[in-house]
Image 1: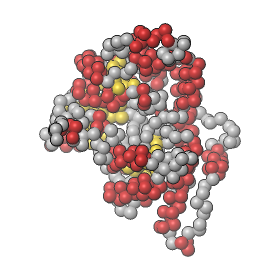
Image 2: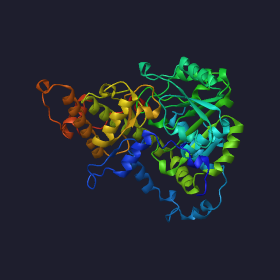
Image 3: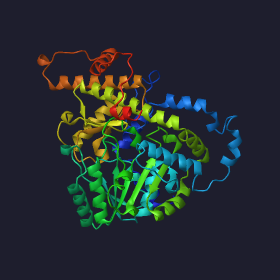
Image 4: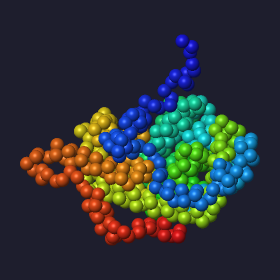
Length: 475
Protein backbone atom coordinates (compact mmCIF):
# COMPACT_ATOMS: atom_id res chain seq x y z
CA UNK A 1 0.00 0.00 0.00
CA UNK A 2 1.38 3.41 -0.97
CA UNK A 3 1.86 5.69 2.04
CA UNK A 4 0.26 9.12 2.08
CA UNK A 5 1.09 12.15 4.20
CA UNK A 6 0.76 12.43 7.96
CA UNK A 7 -1.63 15.34 7.52
CA UNK A 8 -3.87 13.20 5.31
CA UNK A 9 -3.89 10.25 7.71
CA UNK A 10 -4.04 12.23 10.95
CA UNK A 11 -7.12 13.33 12.87
CA UNK A 12 -6.38 17.05 12.66
CA UNK A 13 -9.70 17.72 10.97
CA UNK A 14 -11.45 16.93 14.25
CA UNK A 15 -14.11 14.65 12.80
CA UNK A 16 -13.95 12.48 15.91
CA UNK A 17 -15.79 15.25 17.79
CA UNK A 18 -19.39 14.78 18.95
CA UNK A 19 -20.10 18.01 17.07
CA UNK A 20 -19.45 16.24 13.76
CA UNK A 21 -20.95 12.95 15.00
CA UNK A 22 -24.26 14.77 15.33
CA UNK A 23 -24.03 15.87 11.72
CA UNK A 24 -23.36 12.28 10.65
CA UNK A 25 -26.45 11.12 12.55
CA UNK A 26 -28.52 13.70 10.69
CA UNK A 27 -27.02 12.85 7.30
CA UNK A 28 -27.82 9.15 7.67
CA UNK A 29 -31.44 9.81 8.68
CA UNK A 30 -32.51 13.38 7.78
CA UNK A 31 -35.95 14.57 8.80
CA UNK A 32 -38.54 15.18 6.07
CA UNK A 33 -42.17 15.96 6.96
CA UNK A 34 -43.50 13.39 4.47
CA UNK A 35 -40.71 11.01 3.50
CA UNK A 36 -38.93 10.78 6.92
CA UNK A 37 -41.20 12.15 9.65
CA UNK A 38 -39.21 10.21 12.27
CA UNK A 39 -35.83 11.40 10.99
CA UNK A 40 -33.27 13.52 12.83
CA UNK A 41 -33.97 17.25 12.78
CA UNK A 42 -30.87 19.34 12.09
CA UNK A 43 -30.41 21.79 14.96
CA UNK A 44 -26.62 21.72 14.82
CA UNK A 45 -26.25 23.93 11.74
CA UNK A 46 -25.90 27.68 12.35
CA UNK A 47 -27.60 28.83 9.17
CA UNK A 48 -29.86 31.81 8.56
CA UNK A 49 -32.81 30.79 6.39
CA UNK A 50 -35.32 33.32 7.70
CA UNK A 51 -34.94 35.99 4.98
CA UNK A 52 -34.73 33.94 1.81
CA UNK A 53 -38.11 35.10 0.51
CA UNK A 54 -36.95 38.69 0.97
CA UNK A 55 -33.70 37.98 -0.92
CA UNK A 56 -35.49 35.95 -3.59
CA UNK A 57 -37.70 38.96 -4.36
CA UNK A 58 -34.61 41.11 -5.00
CA UNK A 59 -33.06 38.42 -7.23
CA UNK A 60 -36.24 38.19 -9.30
CA UNK A 61 -36.31 41.97 -9.69
CA UNK A 62 -32.62 42.20 -10.69
CA UNK A 63 -31.90 39.62 -13.40
CA UNK A 64 -28.83 41.66 -14.42
CA UNK A 65 -27.10 40.34 -11.29
CA UNK A 66 -26.94 36.92 -12.93
CA UNK A 67 -24.59 36.27 -15.83
CA UNK A 68 -26.92 33.51 -17.01
CA UNK A 69 -29.75 35.84 -18.00
CA UNK A 70 -30.54 37.98 -21.02
CA UNK A 71 -30.02 41.08 -18.89
CA UNK A 72 -26.64 39.99 -17.51
CA UNK A 73 -25.10 38.05 -20.40
CA UNK A 74 -23.22 41.10 -21.71
CA UNK A 75 -20.91 40.87 -18.71
CA UNK A 76 -20.39 37.13 -19.09
CA UNK A 77 -17.10 37.30 -21.00
CA UNK A 78 -15.32 39.88 -18.85
CA UNK A 79 -16.40 38.07 -15.69
CA UNK A 80 -15.50 34.61 -16.97
CA UNK A 81 -11.98 35.64 -17.97
CA UNK A 82 -9.02 35.66 -15.57
CA UNK A 83 -9.41 37.72 -12.41
CA UNK A 84 -6.39 38.43 -10.22
CA UNK A 85 -6.39 37.67 -6.52
CA UNK A 86 -7.15 41.26 -5.51
CA UNK A 87 -10.79 40.66 -6.37
CA UNK A 88 -13.08 42.86 -8.42
CA UNK A 89 -12.92 46.50 -7.26
CA UNK A 90 -16.70 46.77 -7.19
CA UNK A 91 -16.88 43.62 -5.02
CA UNK A 92 -14.39 44.94 -2.46
CA UNK A 93 -16.08 48.34 -2.39
CA UNK A 94 -19.54 46.80 -1.86
CA UNK A 95 -18.33 44.47 0.91
CA UNK A 96 -16.47 47.30 2.69
CA UNK A 97 -19.60 49.46 2.55
CA UNK A 98 -21.79 46.60 3.84
CA UNK A 99 -19.42 45.95 6.75
CA UNK A 100 -19.74 49.60 7.71
CA UNK A 101 -23.54 49.54 7.54
CA UNK A 102 -23.74 46.38 9.63
CA UNK A 103 -21.77 48.25 12.31
CA UNK A 104 -24.24 51.12 12.31
CA UNK A 105 -22.14 53.42 10.13
CA UNK A 106 -19.92 54.18 13.10
CA UNK A 107 -16.78 53.02 11.31
CA UNK A 108 -15.61 52.88 7.70
CA UNK A 109 -13.60 50.14 6.02
CA UNK A 110 -10.99 50.63 3.30
CA UNK A 111 -11.75 48.46 0.20
CA UNK A 112 -8.01 48.14 -0.42
CA UNK A 113 -7.68 46.21 2.85
CA UNK A 114 -10.37 43.69 1.89
CA UNK A 115 -8.83 40.26 1.21
CA UNK A 116 -11.18 37.52 0.03
CA UNK A 117 -11.07 33.83 0.81
CA UNK A 118 -13.15 30.69 0.50
CA UNK A 119 -15.44 31.36 3.45
CA UNK A 120 -14.49 32.19 7.04
CA UNK A 121 -12.80 28.77 7.26
CA UNK A 122 -10.25 29.80 4.66
CA UNK A 123 -9.93 33.26 6.18
CA UNK A 124 -9.05 31.88 9.61
CA UNK A 125 -6.47 29.53 8.19
CA UNK A 126 -4.87 32.31 6.15
CA UNK A 127 -4.64 34.54 9.21
CA UNK A 128 -3.05 31.70 11.18
CA UNK A 129 -0.50 31.13 8.40
CA UNK A 130 0.32 34.85 8.36
CA UNK A 131 0.68 35.35 12.11
CA UNK A 132 2.16 32.17 13.57
CA UNK A 133 4.66 29.42 12.87
CA UNK A 134 4.06 25.72 13.60
CA UNK A 135 4.18 25.06 17.33
CA UNK A 136 3.19 28.62 18.29
CA UNK A 137 -0.18 29.31 19.89
CA UNK A 138 -3.35 31.38 19.94
CA UNK A 139 -5.46 31.93 23.04
CA UNK A 140 -9.19 31.24 22.49
CA UNK A 141 -11.92 31.96 25.09
CA UNK A 142 -14.26 29.04 25.82
CA UNK A 143 -16.73 27.91 24.81
CA UNK A 144 -15.68 28.28 21.17
CA UNK A 145 -16.70 26.99 17.74
CA UNK A 146 -15.43 23.39 17.29
CA UNK A 147 -14.33 24.13 13.74
CA UNK A 148 -11.53 26.35 15.04
CA UNK A 149 -9.60 23.20 15.93
CA UNK A 150 -9.64 22.38 12.23
CA UNK A 151 -9.46 25.87 10.72
CA UNK A 152 -6.51 27.16 12.71
CA UNK A 153 -4.60 23.98 13.58
CA UNK A 154 -4.91 21.22 11.02
CA UNK A 155 -2.61 22.43 8.24
CA UNK A 156 -0.82 25.28 10.02
CA UNK A 157 0.57 23.35 13.01
CA UNK A 158 -0.61 26.15 15.31
CA UNK A 159 -1.78 25.26 18.84
CA UNK A 160 -4.91 26.59 20.59
CA UNK A 161 -4.87 27.34 24.32
CA UNK A 162 -8.32 27.69 25.95
CA UNK A 163 -9.13 30.78 27.98
CA UNK A 164 -11.51 29.21 30.47
CA UNK A 165 -14.71 31.24 30.92
CA UNK A 166 -17.38 30.16 33.41
CA UNK A 167 -21.16 30.18 33.71
CA UNK A 168 -20.95 31.86 37.13
CA UNK A 169 -20.37 35.19 35.37
CA UNK A 170 -22.20 34.32 32.13
CA UNK A 171 -18.96 33.24 30.42
CA UNK A 172 -17.44 36.73 30.41
CA UNK A 173 -13.84 37.12 29.26
CA UNK A 174 -11.93 38.44 32.27
CA UNK A 175 -8.38 39.70 32.62
CA UNK A 176 -7.73 36.96 35.18
CA UNK A 177 -8.82 34.26 32.70
CA UNK A 178 -6.62 35.74 29.97
CA UNK A 179 -3.60 35.89 32.26
CA UNK A 180 -4.15 32.32 33.46
CA UNK A 181 -4.26 31.01 29.88
CA UNK A 182 -1.20 33.03 28.92
CA UNK A 183 0.77 31.62 31.86
CA UNK A 184 -0.42 28.09 31.09
CA UNK A 185 0.91 28.45 27.55
CA UNK A 186 4.26 29.67 28.85
CA UNK A 187 4.48 26.69 31.22
CA UNK A 188 3.92 24.41 28.23
CA UNK A 189 6.75 26.20 26.37
CA UNK A 190 4.29 27.61 23.84
CA UNK A 191 4.94 31.03 22.39
CA UNK A 192 1.63 32.91 22.30
CA UNK A 193 1.22 34.85 19.05
CA UNK A 194 -2.37 36.00 19.35
CA UNK A 195 -5.82 36.01 20.90
CA UNK A 196 -8.90 34.98 18.90
CA UNK A 197 -12.27 36.34 20.03
CA UNK A 198 -15.68 35.65 18.50
CA UNK A 199 -18.03 38.61 18.74
CA UNK A 200 -20.96 37.99 18.67
CA UNK A 201 -20.18 34.68 20.31
CA UNK A 202 -20.69 31.28 18.77
CA UNK A 203 -22.09 29.36 20.69
CA UNK A 204 -23.29 31.79 23.38
CA UNK A 205 -25.25 34.25 21.24
CA UNK A 206 -23.91 37.13 23.33
CA UNK A 207 -21.85 40.19 22.47
CA UNK A 208 -18.76 41.66 24.10
CA UNK A 209 -19.40 45.01 25.75
CA UNK A 210 -17.24 48.05 25.17
CA UNK A 211 -15.34 47.79 28.48
CA UNK A 212 -14.50 44.12 27.89
CA UNK A 213 -13.23 44.92 24.39
CA UNK A 214 -11.09 47.77 25.70
CA UNK A 215 -9.63 45.42 28.31
CA UNK A 216 -8.84 42.87 25.61
CA UNK A 217 -7.08 45.48 23.47
CA UNK A 218 -5.08 46.58 26.51
CA UNK A 219 -4.10 42.96 27.19
CA UNK A 220 -2.86 42.20 23.67
CA UNK A 221 -0.96 45.48 23.54
CA UNK A 222 0.82 44.77 26.81
CA UNK A 223 1.70 41.24 25.66
CA UNK A 224 2.50 42.44 22.11
CA UNK A 225 0.38 39.68 20.57
CA UNK A 226 -2.14 39.80 17.73
CA UNK A 227 -5.90 40.13 18.13
CA UNK A 228 -8.17 38.32 15.65
CA UNK A 229 -11.79 39.43 15.85
CA UNK A 230 -14.19 36.91 14.32
CA UNK A 231 -17.23 39.12 13.57
CA UNK A 232 -19.13 36.87 11.19
CA UNK A 233 -22.37 37.22 13.23
CA UNK A 234 -22.25 41.05 13.37
CA UNK A 235 -25.61 41.58 11.62
CA UNK A 236 -27.44 38.95 13.70
CA UNK A 237 -27.75 41.21 16.78
CA UNK A 238 -31.53 41.46 17.04
CA UNK A 239 -32.01 43.52 20.21
CA UNK A 240 -30.08 45.83 22.50
CA UNK A 241 -27.34 46.22 23.52
CA UNK A 242 -26.05 46.86 20.04
CA UNK A 243 -22.96 45.28 18.55
CA UNK A 244 -19.58 46.93 19.12
CA UNK A 245 -16.84 46.05 16.66
CA UNK A 246 -13.16 45.90 17.50
CA UNK A 247 -12.78 48.42 14.65
CA UNK A 248 -14.65 50.95 16.82
CA UNK A 249 -12.58 50.27 19.91
CA UNK A 250 -9.27 50.99 18.22
CA UNK A 251 -10.63 54.47 17.39
CA UNK A 252 -11.16 55.08 21.11
CA UNK A 253 -8.00 53.69 22.72
CA UNK A 254 -4.32 53.79 21.92
CA UNK A 255 -3.05 50.55 20.44
CA UNK A 256 -0.68 49.13 17.89
CA UNK A 257 -2.99 48.71 14.90
CA UNK A 258 -0.58 46.28 13.28
CA UNK A 259 -1.88 43.77 15.85
CA UNK A 260 -5.56 44.06 14.83
CA UNK A 261 -7.28 41.77 12.29
CA UNK A 262 -10.94 41.03 11.52
CA UNK A 263 -12.44 37.90 9.96
CA UNK A 264 -15.82 38.34 8.28
CA UNK A 265 -18.06 36.49 5.85
CA UNK A 266 -21.56 36.54 4.37
CA UNK A 267 -22.38 33.00 5.49
CA UNK A 268 -24.21 33.96 8.69
CA UNK A 269 -25.27 37.58 8.31
CA UNK A 270 -26.87 37.04 4.89
CA UNK A 271 -27.33 33.27 4.94
CA UNK A 272 -24.97 32.60 2.01
CA UNK A 273 -22.64 29.80 3.20
CA UNK A 274 -22.78 28.16 -0.21
CA UNK A 275 -21.25 31.21 -1.88
CA UNK A 276 -18.06 30.80 0.21
CA UNK A 277 -17.47 34.53 0.69
CA UNK A 278 -14.86 34.99 3.41
CA UNK A 279 -13.10 38.23 4.23
CA UNK A 280 -9.89 39.19 6.02
CA UNK A 281 -9.62 42.83 7.03
CA UNK A 282 -6.24 43.63 8.57
CA UNK A 283 -4.78 46.92 9.75
CA UNK A 284 -1.32 45.43 9.15
CA UNK A 285 0.07 46.12 5.65
CA UNK A 286 2.32 43.05 5.69
CA UNK A 287 -0.60 40.77 6.62
CA UNK A 288 -2.77 42.26 3.87
CA UNK A 289 -0.01 41.66 1.33
CA UNK A 290 0.71 38.11 2.48
CA UNK A 291 -2.95 37.12 2.82
CA UNK A 292 -3.71 38.44 -0.65
CA UNK A 293 -1.02 36.23 -2.16
CA UNK A 294 -2.27 33.23 -0.18
CA UNK A 295 -5.85 33.88 -1.27
CA UNK A 296 -4.96 32.31 -4.62
CA UNK A 297 -5.67 28.96 -2.96
CA UNK A 298 -9.26 29.88 -2.12
CA UNK A 299 -10.67 32.72 -4.20
CA UNK A 300 -14.33 33.67 -4.45
CA UNK A 301 -15.58 32.94 -7.95
CA UNK A 302 -15.93 35.98 -10.20
CA UNK A 303 -19.57 35.08 -10.86
CA UNK A 304 -20.27 35.22 -7.12
CA UNK A 305 -18.32 38.48 -6.81
CA UNK A 306 -20.49 39.99 -9.54
CA UNK A 307 -23.74 38.94 -7.86
CA UNK A 308 -22.64 40.11 -4.40
CA UNK A 309 -21.31 43.42 -5.72
CA UNK A 310 -24.62 44.12 -7.48
CA UNK A 311 -26.70 43.15 -4.46
CA UNK A 312 -24.70 44.98 -1.79
CA UNK A 313 -24.44 48.12 -3.94
CA UNK A 314 -28.23 48.48 -3.68
CA UNK A 315 -28.50 50.71 -0.61
CA UNK A 316 -32.27 50.39 -0.31
CA UNK A 317 -32.05 46.60 -0.35
CA UNK A 318 -29.22 46.48 2.20
CA UNK A 319 -30.95 48.87 4.60
CA UNK A 320 -34.21 46.94 4.37
CA UNK A 321 -32.48 43.57 4.66
CA UNK A 322 -30.67 44.51 7.87
CA UNK A 323 -33.97 45.54 9.48
CA UNK A 324 -35.89 42.53 8.14
CA UNK A 325 -33.26 40.08 9.33
CA UNK A 326 -33.26 41.51 12.85
CA UNK A 327 -37.05 41.35 13.03
CA UNK A 328 -37.16 37.73 11.85
CA UNK A 329 -34.42 36.64 14.26
CA UNK A 330 -36.06 38.46 17.16
CA UNK A 331 -39.43 36.80 16.52
CA UNK A 332 -37.93 33.32 16.16
CA UNK A 333 -35.67 33.70 19.21
CA UNK A 334 -38.49 34.93 21.47
CA UNK A 335 -40.88 32.21 20.35
CA UNK A 336 -38.30 29.45 20.63
CA UNK A 337 -37.04 30.43 24.09
CA UNK A 338 -40.60 30.97 25.37
CA UNK A 339 -41.60 27.51 24.16
CA UNK A 340 -38.61 25.94 25.93
CA UNK A 341 -39.32 27.83 29.14
CA UNK A 342 -42.86 26.39 29.18
CA UNK A 343 -41.38 22.93 29.64
CA UNK A 344 -38.78 24.03 32.18
CA UNK A 345 -35.75 24.53 29.93
CA UNK A 346 -33.67 27.67 30.35
CA UNK A 347 -30.86 29.18 28.35
CA UNK A 348 -28.17 31.83 28.64
CA UNK A 349 -29.62 35.31 28.05
CA UNK A 350 -28.64 36.30 24.53
CA UNK A 351 -29.34 38.91 21.88
CA UNK A 352 -27.46 37.71 18.80
CA UNK A 353 -26.61 34.71 16.67
CA UNK A 354 -28.64 31.92 15.11
CA UNK A 355 -28.76 29.70 18.21
CA UNK A 356 -29.23 29.58 21.96
CA UNK A 357 -26.97 28.15 24.67
CA UNK A 358 -29.44 25.72 26.25
CA UNK A 359 -29.06 24.79 29.91
CA UNK A 360 -29.76 21.10 30.60
CA UNK A 361 -27.57 20.81 33.69
CA UNK A 362 -30.51 19.71 35.84
CA UNK A 363 -31.13 16.75 33.52
CA UNK A 364 -27.65 15.26 34.08
CA UNK A 365 -27.53 12.18 36.29
CA UNK A 366 -24.23 13.49 37.62
CA UNK A 367 -22.14 16.59 36.97
CA UNK A 368 -19.69 14.99 34.55
CA UNK A 369 -18.97 15.13 30.84
CA UNK A 370 -19.73 11.42 30.63
CA UNK A 371 -23.23 12.22 31.85
CA UNK A 372 -23.47 15.02 29.30
CA UNK A 373 -22.58 12.62 26.52
CA UNK A 374 -25.10 10.08 27.78
CA UNK A 375 -27.82 12.74 27.66
CA UNK A 376 -26.67 13.86 24.21
CA UNK A 377 -26.93 10.29 22.88
CA UNK A 378 -30.53 10.13 24.13
CA UNK A 379 -31.33 13.41 22.38
CA UNK A 380 -29.72 12.25 19.13
CA UNK A 381 -30.93 8.63 19.07
CA UNK A 382 -34.33 8.84 20.79
CA UNK A 383 -35.55 12.42 20.58
CA UNK A 384 -33.99 12.61 17.10
CA UNK A 385 -32.60 16.13 17.37
CA UNK A 386 -29.06 17.06 16.40
CA UNK A 387 -28.04 19.50 19.11
CA UNK A 388 -24.38 20.08 19.96
CA UNK A 389 -23.01 19.26 23.44
CA UNK A 390 -21.04 21.92 25.28
CA UNK A 391 -18.00 19.68 25.59
CA UNK A 392 -17.55 19.83 21.81
CA UNK A 393 -17.20 23.61 22.23
CA UNK A 394 -14.58 23.09 24.96
CA UNK A 395 -17.03 24.30 27.62
CA UNK A 396 -15.57 23.83 31.09
CA UNK A 397 -18.90 22.82 32.67
CA UNK A 398 -21.11 19.89 31.60
CA UNK A 399 -24.78 20.28 30.75
CA UNK A 400 -24.82 23.07 28.17
CA UNK A 401 -25.94 22.50 24.56
CA UNK A 402 -26.00 24.73 21.48
CA UNK A 403 -29.33 24.64 19.65
CA UNK A 404 -29.79 26.37 16.28
CA UNK A 405 -33.21 27.88 15.54
CA UNK A 406 -32.88 29.82 12.26
CA UNK A 407 -32.06 26.97 9.85
CA UNK A 408 -35.56 25.53 9.52
CA UNK A 409 -39.08 26.53 8.58
CA UNK A 410 -41.76 27.16 11.19
CA UNK A 411 -43.40 23.74 10.78
CA UNK A 412 -40.13 21.88 11.32
CA UNK A 413 -39.48 24.02 14.39
CA UNK A 414 -42.86 23.01 15.80
CA UNK A 415 -42.03 19.33 15.30
CA UNK A 416 -38.74 19.86 17.13
CA UNK A 417 -40.47 21.68 19.99
CA UNK A 418 -43.08 18.93 20.27
CA UNK A 419 -40.32 16.34 20.52
CA UNK A 420 -38.64 18.38 23.26
CA UNK A 421 -41.97 18.74 25.11
CA UNK A 422 -42.57 14.99 24.96
CA UNK A 423 -39.04 14.26 26.15
CA UNK A 424 -39.35 16.64 29.09
CA UNK A 425 -42.69 15.16 30.18
CA UNK A 426 -41.21 11.67 30.11
CA UNK A 427 -38.19 12.87 32.06
CA UNK A 428 -40.36 14.56 34.68
CA UNK A 429 -42.53 11.47 35.06
CA UNK A 430 -39.44 9.36 35.63
CA UNK A 431 -38.19 11.78 38.30
CA UNK A 432 -41.50 12.33 40.16
CA UNK A 433 -43.52 9.50 41.79
CA UNK A 434 -46.52 8.73 39.62
CA UNK A 435 -49.04 9.27 42.44
CA UNK A 436 -47.76 12.86 42.77
CA UNK A 437 -47.55 13.48 39.07
CA UNK A 438 -50.68 15.00 37.61
CA UNK A 439 -50.62 13.77 34.07
CA UNK A 440 -50.79 16.66 31.61
CA UNK A 441 -51.26 16.30 27.90
CA UNK A 442 -48.01 15.53 26.15
CA UNK A 443 -49.12 17.46 23.15
CA UNK A 444 -48.79 21.23 23.44
CA UNK A 445 -50.82 22.36 20.42
CA UNK A 446 -49.47 24.85 17.96
CA UNK A 447 -52.37 27.21 18.60
CA UNK A 448 -51.89 27.13 22.40
CA UNK A 449 -48.18 27.89 22.16
CA UNK A 450 -48.83 30.61 19.60
CA UNK A 451 -51.52 32.16 21.82
CA UNK A 452 -49.16 32.18 24.80
CA UNK A 453 -46.48 33.84 22.71
CA UNK A 454 -48.88 36.47 21.40
CA UNK A 455 -50.39 37.23 24.81
CA UNK A 456 -46.98 37.75 26.39
CA UNK A 457 -46.20 40.25 23.65
CA UNK A 458 -49.70 41.84 23.67
CA UNK A 459 -50.27 40.80 20.07
CA UNK A 460 -53.17 39.37 18.12
CA UNK A 461 -52.35 36.38 15.85
CA UNK A 462 -52.43 38.77 12.89
CA UNK A 463 -50.45 41.63 14.42
CA UNK A 464 -47.07 42.58 12.96
CA UNK A 465 -44.04 41.43 14.91
CA UNK A 466 -42.84 44.25 17.21
CA UNK A 467 -39.48 45.77 16.41
CA UNK A 468 -36.69 45.74 18.92
CA UNK A 469 -35.44 49.15 20.10
CA UNK A 470 -32.29 48.55 18.08
CA UNK A 471 -34.30 47.95 14.91
CA UNK A 472 -36.56 50.98 15.51
CA UNK A 473 -33.55 53.20 15.97
CA UNK A 474 -32.33 52.34 12.48
CA UNK A 475 -35.60 52.70 10.55
